[in-house]
Length: 458
Ligand code: UDX
Ligand code: UDX
Image 1 (cartoon, protein in one colour):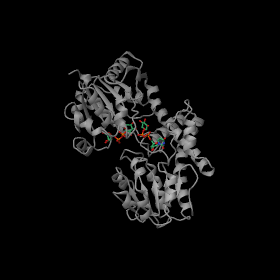
Image 2: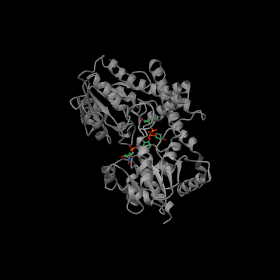
Image 3: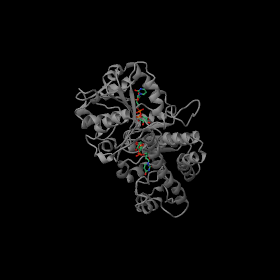
Image 4: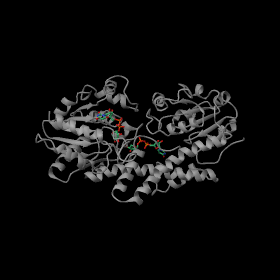
């Protein structure tokens, strides 16, 4: 087999796993191996219980696994055989030293590069899938080229834009595939090979090729701009709550302007997920590094509004429940950072729950997919937090229900039944604006929609 049809992906996480599964499905002529240092994760990918939940993923994996898609911990053999190596290891925010709390921690990336050098025996194309600060490919290129075996590594950037919960659909029908390469002959040749993989199912006009730096930066900017829209509407939600405007109406009216567009204008408890905050902080750090403090401050504002939104939500709860929630039972509906995923990384629910626990509230959490992660996120608070497998058990005897994730099932629950079982007065704080507020009010709830006036009788 042509060695460029042998593909390796290092990192079997939320990005690497689904991306490679879809490539395997769409390119039967390619043979793909996904390796990870985490044995348990690899084992899970090889079992019936995949390590991540994504609609449609199981079917794709079952169709391709052990045919042209393999999950393994044997990085040595996989590196030797592959012509193209995708790197999809995590790049968390640094927690120590220069740039702590802002810059990306590249230690996994560098370790990976050194592992590739150790086992490689011939030239390879190395493709960054991880989101990395601009100019990392250059550093990576230098590390890889420092090998003493005379091997040439061509480093490309191919950031992934899929969103969780819709990963498989996004990968099958992407808005665009972005691939950045060096402007050299070898760079362009490598670029053609990677373009050819995607061209198996993505129309050519949607495959955008750029230089490496533009590609790396575009990923940070895309996430920063998406998050910026959320912070923009969330900032307006605060104003709406003080006045008679309704943020949903404002959002719809503004979004009807085709120049603005309607997507990503849903006000809520704040954005979460593994990427937005990390990528914006990276951008902020980069701007600071290049002597652009005004630009850094501008983007930092997006994260500050997000923190403000979470704090504001908790303040409203405490204020409306007679300024104390100590020892009051609160039902938390939804812990995942968004619907259709069990992922809780940077979920607003974590921060909101911890603030409520500081106020000594007693929490009972329900989420259809994320309970296991929620337990880890709230480890140490076992005495004050319970977990329920069922929303009706969750709300029993509670003073308030908080909607923190926009799971569809929350819209169709039997609210009269929930109301009956709760302590009175019963409160609903709809942090995602998905419920029918007037109906709930008529049932007897005190209703606090996000970004519009309270509907309350106390
Ligand atoms: C990660 C980054 O968070 C994101 O910035 C980037 O765009 C893509 O990679 P994700 O796939 O969601 O996203 O991360 P995660 O689910 O943590 O997966 C990374 C995997 O890499 C883990 O399974 C980890 O065990 C593995 N890994 C990490 C290695 O195999 N080797 C290492 O040296 C480090
Ligand atoms: C994001 C980007 O969308 C994706 O392109 C990138 O590859 C990874 O980061 P993801 O984090 O999976 O994807 O989810 P996304 O749908 O973007 O939602 C992020 C957060 O914003 C969630 O907490 C979501 O609830 C919130 N959100 C989204 C809002 O609060 N309002 C909106 O209008 C949209």
